[in-house]
Image (cartoon, rainbow, N blue to C red; front, side, top):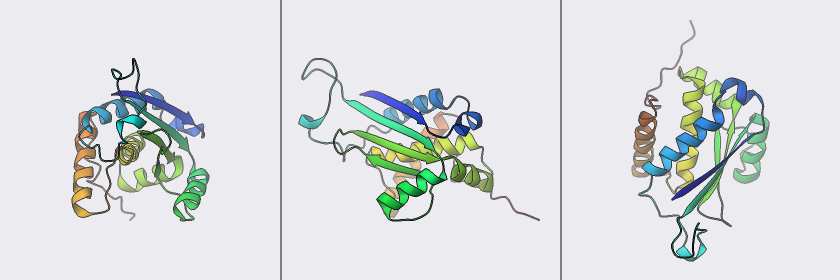
Amino acid sequence: MVLIVEVQIETPAWRKAWPRVVAETKELLRVALADSGGKRSQLPPSSKIRRTGKPGHGELNFEATVVLADDARLKDLNARFRRKDKPTNVLSFPDGDNPPGGGIALSLETISAEAEAQGKSFVNHAKHMILHGFLHLRGYDHDRPRAARLMEGLEIAILARMGIPNPYLIETKTRA
């Protein structure tokens, strides 16, 4: 499978908070694609999949666009597509016209606030949210307990390969 990743930085503060954001996002998704290959439930029939190379001999393209934005942008997207009038950390948008793949949008302010509250580094939390959105594009979900355990286990394993601690072990900071 060939991974094609585009990173769009709409909010310049992302570069300051995470200087290697483009390269590290691409590497994270490369590892995630390799490690999440077993889930194919949302892939379309082969006749609808864009392939590279000669017809019948090419590899599957998985195209993902990662949009690094702010709370205002995520609030707008969340309201338009989920009918929730508030910002959120990450949203995934499967590409119905060109599967497999799609878009992932992240909010700088929300991810920063969550990382601070949970005692995590900003970069590690952002990587977790990108991975979380990517797994949704791969067909994983967390709407039922068994599905949630599967998705979370995969997130933990992939992040561990990248040297990132278990994101579900949260050290909530207390204010004295």
